[in-house]
Figure (tube, rainbow, N blue to C red):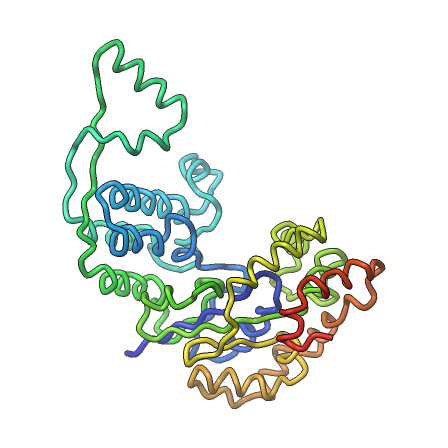
Length: 346
């Protein structure tokens, strides 16, 4: 079975949910919920860091630390916090991967970790102590001063051999567990040198969605006129306002400029760049373009249109024009002129 992974991404509040909605109405594709982001690769301590320290920049210090960071990540993101389970309340960060991925994610991940460890041994090893909290370091010092006791660290060794092949099999188990060989994720890849993520899959595709930054900014101030049903009850507008830094227009622009400077906007056979506005106003052509890119026949456009209803999304385009502070939107246009010109925003 030739499994295909599709990721929908952007730089925040760009309207990518509409692509998610287009694909979820094809029964051949398992589409993750729009509010669930599969962060296992990109998050600090995740698979990108693990590969860097076991393959590209190996040393015994970094190898041991990277594996332990990944183990901690798995322990934190796997369980759901349940009021009846004190441990889960203390450990879980609320990402609930066991539940969201509908599998025993924690057990599968721990088996994967065991498979990349060549051996472990107890050793006096000072490096992990750097990252322990001050109280633990204080207790260690007291133990040594009073009893000359030096706790040994369980040192983990991995040669990193066959890392890519082993990791691909692990991700296949985690993601392709619904009897479908096409899976669509959200923000698993990023627009910043996304090729590094493709090492983990045999057949990856990335769709990047871009939006007028003035609408991004204003929508976090006044709210989108139309909001997808999945987002209505989760305080999404407040969340978007926070992570886009739109409390302050200068910070918003600085964030946008830095993020955009790391993007190439080039289409390849693995990467497709789309404007949110083009998807909405040229819906039929956009669906065909997406299908051609993914090599999937999305030919029932009328049915997809009926279920997605792009007419609602049109209400979220050009909302900056009615914003009370046009000095701010003019400032955004001026400061992000290269991006605005590239995508034809007037």
